[in-house]
Length: 409
Image 1: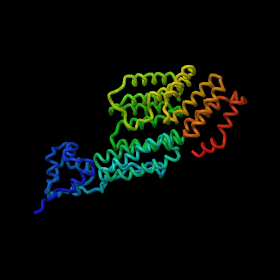
Image 2: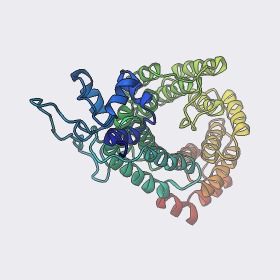
Image 3: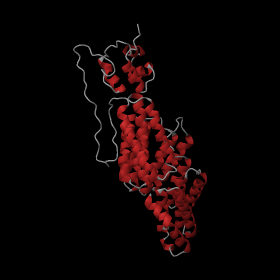
Image 4: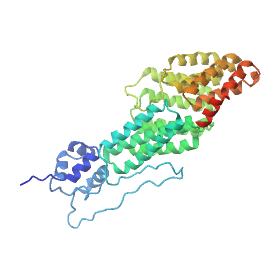
């Protein structure tokens, strides 16, 4: 007589949710592994009331779909699960489902989805933003479609990759496409996905990105509130020194834009101390936009804004030497800030040399923030606009290739 395969429905749901062993599911539910073995036996007992909800929530299916037969007289709730209603945003932006519905995807879907997320993150540093943005949003739409078809560890992993994907889309919209309102809505989606993943460090990074938006416009109280939230989330996870220092740098940037350079320099000094002290915790893989050199770039810009020109020049030249060949976008910003230092020091020839170098780099790797820096320098050079070096800068700044490139991006 053939041996029964047992409760294959429960076993399949367990594997699809990412629990590769009975012990793993037992640990997630807070029960003994013996209990899970009994549930996966040919005649599984009906789960006790105190574990029913945890079991269905963890595996994303109702008890009968998991192979259990209710005892006589037991009422079974077969209500459908819901999906988060869309808030009034652009119709093209997918929403984050908050509950699980069948059928379930295999556990491998999480790793497959995350591979593309990581690839997009790396491509950000070399691919034109207008080219990269559509596939990143399409990947987010795919993640929103996959999320209701996953449960347990698989759902958590998909939600985390989805949060990172939305965060990347928001970064492109804010830093590259200069669409802050759109970025705000996209980052909200990122935060919702991070909540589904229960990923506080991702939540911290996303909230800090949202602070850039009011900070750029001088809305200090709003930016400060978001930074308080970001720091609160960072305390909930094993935050690395780099993440904590970056939060200081973001707040410093906001304070600089709000006219508080002294406060900003204090924050940057604290960030330097944090990096020097280090941390036992490793930085998340997605934290690829920050380093000691990037912190020094924040510092140089703040020194420039504060009018500390010799210090700003020294800091920014050090950053320029420290940046690697793969940091072309940041290079344009540093060259623009060095041009601004020389313009403020009443040296238009030196200012134009740096601005022209920035334009050379922008032709190879477009970055809206870098172009903004060059345009700010040109406005500062108005008193010298009849000089030959400024006219040469205008010829490049408003040449066919630069103008068409800027409009096309």
